View (cartoon, helix red, strand yellow):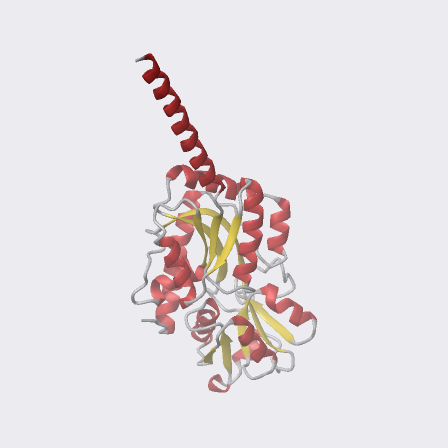
Length: 320
């Protein structure tokens, strides 16, 4: 009996060690940060800044996994369906978590039901830019242009650049023609070449071209001027009423992630986004920080879904 008792204690110790080792291995497993757009895009750059800082904060590898396609819906669905996986998060955007809710007739995920926000990374206005050789110096000049002789580019149907252009049409009473491209880089190249007359795009991408004399900025899409381009007046300042559109980025966990891991990631994310070095790197991309708690993030996202839903309906944009 005594020998059996000793063996039982020894076996329990071995099992406990094995369980502890398994748990440690689980904690050491890399976290996958899904970026639902291609490498080299603004979203990708933002995702890599966050991943690097989050990895340091957690003392755990955080790997960026680019899953582009369908306006971010492919990567978003992947994370939504990851279930109780404690090692997969998503860098959501205004597209994936506001625009797509109205744009897609049959969206494969529900932005509010399937995700829980971990941290609001920041927001950026887009700049309305024209070729440097274009005759327009202000939005008032553009208003005088003949509608169908003017076209505007975007990174694709239903993107924020597309809807911003359609909202401008609505506010100006124009019918500027939308020309969608494969991605933002291609669209920007066509605008600089003068093949398309204008587009709305991120400051980080257009400011170097403005400084090089290839583009001119006519206005910012937000209610207040961009920190990255303080000399560019907003469209509202130029008499375009009710024009306040920004692109934004938020880190999300799948709704089914275990609460303990979700809380750990939320705490780490909030700490990372408060770091001056991280904020400086985001500012270099034109991303302006906005401190938000969990309730604030949920309310903000709900308001954005409503606002962009109106823009989608008025534009007539829809994807099956």
